Length: 82
Image (tube, rainbow, N blue to C red):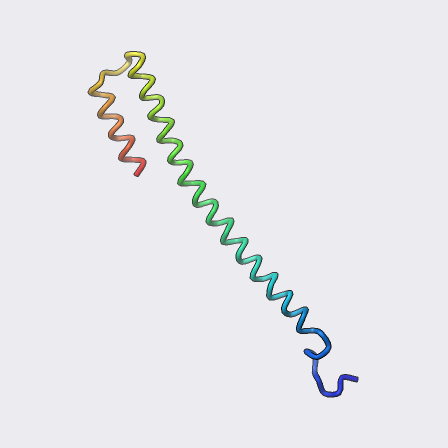
């Protein structure tokens, strides 16, 4: 029999420890995934600003816009990236 040791003397504590560890790992993975999505969103917005500047530079090079308009639009793009 168990000789009054209760459930924890039979090795059940190892199972409880493993369950606790799994719960901690699941919570950690959830927050890691959430954090990577947030970082990905900010990188996406940064890339959109870079792409806008590329298009703006091409329009200036082709002569589609004047330097004054280029400077104005560039200022707007750079302000929206911050």
